[in-house]
Amino acid sequence: MKELDYKKIPNGFLWGASTSAFQVEGAYREDGKGLSIADIRSFRKSKEQLDTKVTVDHYHHWQEDIGLMKELGLKSYRFSISWPRIFPNGDEKEPNKAGLNFYHQLIDALLENNIEPIVTMYHFDQPYGLIEKYGGWVSRDAIKDFVKYAECLLDEFGDKVRYWLTINEQAVLVVAPDMLGIDLNLPDKKRYEQAFQANYHMWLAQAEVFKMCQTRFPNSKIGPAVSYITTLPASRKSFDVMAAKDLEDFYSFAQMEVALKGKIPIYFENELKKLDITIEQYSGDQELLLSGRANCLGVNWYCTTIVEAKSTNDTEQFIFRRIERIRDNDLRYTNWGWNFDPIGLRYGLRQLLNRYADIPILITECGWSEEEELIDGKVHDVRRIEYLDKHIEQMALAIQDGVNVISFNPWSFIDILSVGDGMEKRYGMVYVDRSNFEERSMKRYKKDSFEFYKKVIKANS
Ligand code: BG6
Image 1 (cartoon, rainbow, N blue to C red):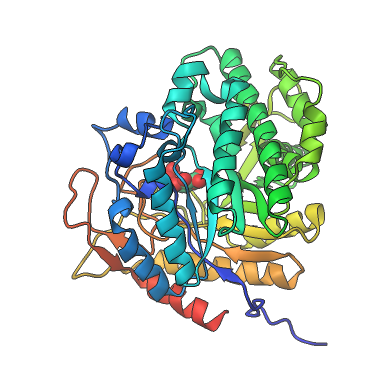
Image 2: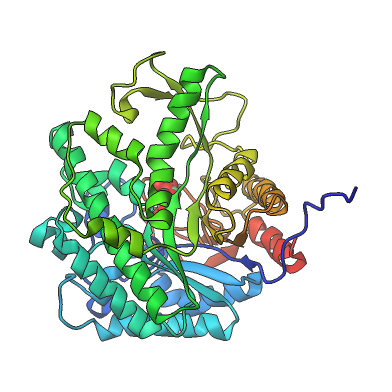
């Protein structure tokens, strides 16, 4: 029998790296950019940690940053376009030319360096103007404004960009609804009602955009970037196994089902009934979901989550209320509670193979966070290297198993402003000399993981 070669990665594989606009660009008011909910949310914590105003100033360092990408040997770069750089309030008739120019320059430079742009249209940064105007995604009006924005991106960049991601981690927006501009002090039922209505509108909006993109650019690939939390039961008892399945289905697979199959799963609707909430739907919506479907899948994968059922037979409670997350002391954790469980990635990818056969999968995020210090110009990020090494190995095994992974984009290319934890929590393969409150030199330093990943890319293994 032929031996499995776990090192074998298909030729043309897109070895990449990932970031998002508000987490790296800074220049929060420059060249006409408007404010986003991500800005507003970060300003609420300005006294405790870094906010979005400057971050790692990629807006002014993009040439240098692309130089580093080239040196690293990247074949792809996944980044997001800042929605309020293009439509500062979200509802302007004409897009902001300066914003478009910035991304034209960036995309052109990537292409000149043979780096395939993988572009996220919306990564947590809806223009705040739309939230003030009609409550953002909670309102059905948000659909037309997102579609108009996406259409503008396709007009401008459709002949340069082959890979598009519509919405980043919709499920995260639902569980942290202040990222949608929803008031966290609302009573539970009201808050969930708004969050799931917003989630529904995002489904409709992305369906329109999938359709538009595939009609206009038949060679393009477009899909959502789903937060896939592979969920494992704390024990082999069937009630724990069922609880894990319920959570994974509700949180991750429902998002994939709607994007790829165009249907809202019944198990998802059943959970909403437990909250006694009804989503406002109109005739024609179901047809739209069916007619606008993704032709690739972006997967953000960091770790597994381990859960147990709070009771052996309670199925009446809403899923988030009837499970408990468990810490497995045999696993290593980041300081922020994310485990190191690489086999979980292979297992998760195999589940995707079972569900979606050979749909092209882009791993759009995968990464390890640490508090780090620069010592003599070096950062010895050994744990990140181990994380990358083991996850790449498991991804390669999944590819051998038949999973159609076409791209791997670790989070993150460069140190970013973490969504939850400011600048202390670093993810990058490139270190940026700044702290939460001091801008320092903003100089870029290659961490040890940069050198490691460079070798992986070069060897394609
Ligand atoms: C993903 C997001 O949820 O997780 C990223 O797409 C984010 O934007 C990443 O940075 C890590 O989360 P955090 O809170 O550590 O920044």
